[in-house]
Image 1 (cartoon, rainbow, N blue to C red):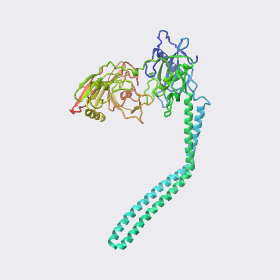
Image 2 (image 1 turned 30 degrees about the vertical axis):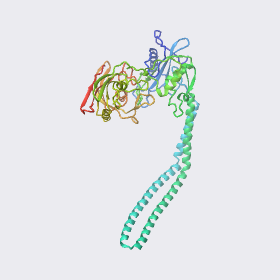
Image 3 (image 1 turned 90 degrees about the vertical axis):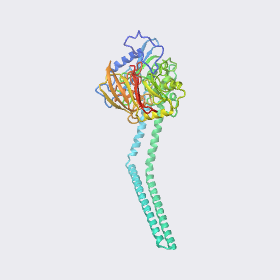
Image 4 (image 1 turned 180 degrees about the vertical axis):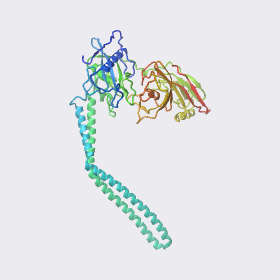
Amino acid sequence: MLHFQHFKEDISGILVPEKFTFPFYYQPHQLAKIATKELQTYLENQTDFIHDFGLHNGEKSYSIGKMFGVLVVKKADNTLGYIAAFSGKLADKSLPDIFVPPIFNMRTEGSFYIQGEKKIEEIGAEIQLLKKDKTYLSLKKSVQKLSKKIEEDLATQRKKMKTSKLARRLRKKEARADLDDTNFEIFSKKLTQESYNDQFFYKELQEYYSFKVEESKNLLADFENKISSLITLRKETSAILQNTLFEKYQFLNQQKETKGLLAIFNNPQVKPPAGAGDCSAPKLLQYAFEHHLTPVVMAEFWWGISPNSEIRKHKNFYPSCLSRCKPILNHMLEGIKIDENLLLKNLAEKEELIIIFEDDDLIVVNKPPEFLSVPGKEITDSVYTRIKQLYPTATGPLIVHRLDMSTSGILVLTKTKEANKILQSQFIKRTVKKRYVALLDGHLKEKNGTIQLPLRLDIDDRPRQLVDFTNGKKAKTNWVTLDQNNNQTRIYFYPITGRTHQLRVHAAHKDGLNMPIVGDDLYGTKQNRLYLHAEFIEFTHPTSKEKIHFTVPADF
């Protein structure tokens, strides 16, 4: 069978799992790891296509990494093998048989999509031609010039009217002293008429200029109307093309039921995200269902340099994306037994929440790893809920600051609304001193430094954060290296700001330390825990106004 790959390595001793991989949070099965290793060996040695992954001769502006996926499948005769795919596009030529085809190839010669794109480009070219027309540009310049002249002339006239008004007021004052009542009344009427004349002239000037502007704009109207009509036509043509394309993406599931993108996302106000259906996971499952292959396990990994905003490490495994893939995979995996969603499991349910300090205003706890600071959508057990149960008479919001669920360490809460307000103010003004200790996955040569990478939420793949110099929020971290051991670096982090996942992203991003924290399941490689601990905090007590500090050493 084309695209079906037989394992080169002996897999006879490996137990086949009963459930399929939960694609949004998983540890790769041994079979998936072997398939991945074989695909990566192919990528390292292949000469079938040319694509600059940025792995050789340094990173270039056009270098780009790529997400690949493997799906271990079983034939009707129980033969195990795997199929492979990549997300998006790869090179510009036909690809080798190791990769399954796209669900819909919009780039097929003569396809409706290419013809539609050509039509849109032609409309765009016509718009640009009109916008660059010499007559159009000349008329536009004339209107702008006339508008400027009108503004200047009217401003000059208003200034004259103001000067005349002041002069009339002075003349009237002098006349009052020099003239009798009869002559003063005659003189006053004369001044009033002068005022009416000024106002009448200004109004006439406004009407004249309004006519001149309208006349000039009418000359532009033919061009503007044509351009506006073409822009509308381009928008409508693009929408029709997009919807036609969406309908071409029809996804199968195990029962051979099909659904298109529009039906899957099922929201008239929101279009399916760009690239929906072109990720590796839907491609793999589609091919499997089309060719009567039973999915066993899957894995996706990054190959090449990381993008500028996201954090992707060469050869690291990653889950399927949420915005594009989750709605599609929910349909495609319908009826298949899937591994438990560990994101819905409270891993800290049996963990004790240790209180390290308490007085009339404060509660300071040592939060265990994988424990929420506040209730989540699926898991309600948290520091907040436990403290609320222990102190039912406490007032105010209790929580002053938060730690990521995976991060352990010191968390400060308040018993009163007043104390909370005072401490919140200290955090906002950044007068609170904090220190985190972490283990980095690698040997960091530098001794200390500062990282400034602005962050924002990746709305396509929550809760991951992106580095974004345009729309991101300022994020600053100071750091100091402590020691190295077993190709790991122990480090102190001193966060100046407190953005979500700030330390994790600043550690892992290629423009940060380029070294993820050990056990980081979002930006590095999952282990038994995230090796990040908030071990020190110092602030001013809300009542005594004295500086107080707490230290809880990490248990790693």
